[in-house]
Length: 358
Image 1: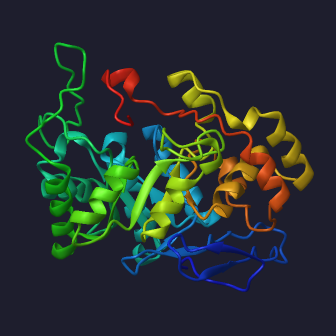
Image 2: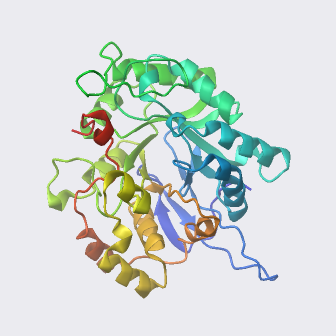
Image 3: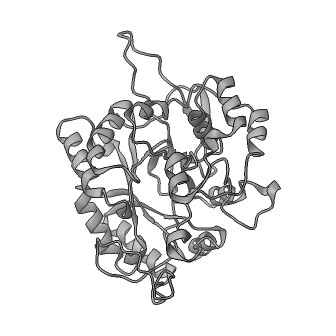
C-alpha cells in the first residue's frame, strides 16, 4: 500500500508552496490489533511523492537492521533514509530484498533515500551504483549530496574522511559543487535516480545550486528541531525558520534530520542537550496526551518539514507515527518558538577540525 491522501483531519503543507495534503489516522480494526499508520506524502518538484515521516537508519546496529526495517514496514513506514556513510546499506538492502520477496511490501510503495559521501564527489556515478548494488535496488527515489564539501578520494566504498597533517579535513579543491551537481543530474537522465537533492547546505550554497542547476534540487535535508530551527547562523532571533521557508519558496522540500535533537546518542557523541528534556515540551506533551517525542515531531510537520526520526527500539516505531490525530495550537507553537537556542546537536567539526556550516 503506497502512502496516499485520505479524508482530512489535519493538514500538512506540501513543502514547496503547493496544495495541502489531507491527513487522518484510521480507526483501529475491530479485532483490537493496531492498524498500520500510513504517513501522508508530499509532492516534490520532480513530481514524485515522498512520505512525510520516514525512518532514519544512522547508527542502526547491523544485527538489528532486518528486524527494525521489517517492523517499520508492518507499522506503516514507507520512507527510509540511508547514506553510504552509515555503512549499513548492505544490511538495509538484505532486509528490503526479503521484504519484497515475501510480499511484505512492493518496491514501488517504498521511498528510499541514500547519500553521496564527501570523498566521492568526483565519482558520483560509481558511488551511486555502489549504493544501488548494496541496497539491491534498480533505482533510488532520492539521492542527496551529503555535505557541501569534496574531500580527498580514496576508493569507492571506503568512505574515508582523510585528515591532513594540520589536523583539518583534507578538502579536494579540484572538484566544485557545481560539477558534483551536474553529475547528480546525469543520474536522473540515466534512470538511476528519480529525484536529487542536497543536504546540510546553508542559504547561500543552496541559492548557488538553484542558479546553476538544470534539474533543481527537490530536497534540502538539514538539521532542524526545537533548539535549532534555522541553520543560518547569522539570522536574528525574530527570523526563526527563515531558511526553511526560503527553501520551500524556491521549490525545495525541507527534510528535518535529527528532528528529536539527537537525544541520548548525540548527547554522548557531541555533548548536546536533548530538547525532549525541556520542561516546556514535557508540560505541553502532557497537555496533548502525547510523549515529548511525538510533540516535537508534530511541531516539525506543522512547520511543513518532512521528519525522519531514528530509533533502535521496535516499540518506538509506531509511537513516532502517531502524529496525525492532534494539532498543536498557534499559541503553543509560539511558546515552543522560545525554546530555540541556535544549538546544533550534530557537529562534525569535532572530528574534521573545520566547521562546514560556517
